[in-house]
Length: 404
Image (cartoon, rainbow, N blue to C red):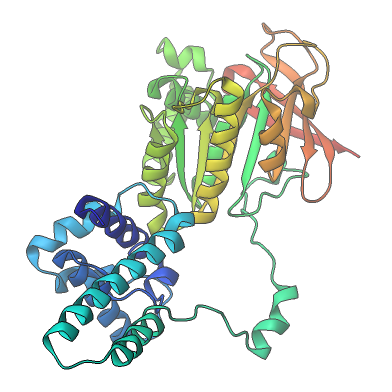
């Protein structure tokens, strides 16, 4: 194998292993699979620390990094941020094991030429190499584990205000879609969820459409209950200014929100989520999926399909839940939206755990207070419609009730 390909395989396996405890514990992952010294060192130190620590629930980076050579510590941190797909792990590891076996067989063949070794003896040694390089990964379930399987369920996100999610209870590690037509309030609704979830979870808001100042201004209007136009024009009363300052304090000290722009490829989004989700469960908003750029696709439909598949993979690879904002087709303006109205809807509908569609009953873009329906169009549970009021100037959705 070419040296560059060997290094590529090693880097990918290392980056996956040192960010996933289960893979780091893999008995097939051994230092001698690697030919690059720094990779051998990293795996050996990680395995030694795990052995010393015993039963751990997360990778003990604070114990691992100091034991690496100083020159290896920066490399370790750098490779943690490498973009990767856990789905490729078994394939890459299998190739490393195969290359290790080839190197061992080559070594034995050279030794056999120099020593008095028979062909049968050489075959026996080669067979042992094959056995030693392929450790079984079949899981043997215990009685207690089997008994608890039917009782376990995916954990739902916890909302401070149930009014935003009357029917939908998004499960962790799923993709959930928010859909609406242009100008109806997709971003405003997403920011209401951000404002709700930001005190409990790390929220990553991938802002692909607006400026960060616009997003922050909307959040502060929502939190302070102050007209966004008055904030823009710096025309606040004393009482409004007090509420605005309080909202700024809450944003800085209580909300754990990162607004990210400039990341318009799925690979860059994956890299950021990989890094941030190491510190605990992240709730990710992508606003909106139509702006994500994917190379090598002939049309928008194929690109959106790829985006949804990758977002779903990300929720399985990392400790995160995704809310994907999606555009609805412009057809049938003014009519209550349906699943078929989702733009490039095939993969969006198939992949999503839940789909919430926004419908402006007032159908008046100039209205500052509109009656909305939040339509739970897809859900792994109940379907239904929630009635809400949308105060546009304050970016606030207020729950009224539910229709069965």
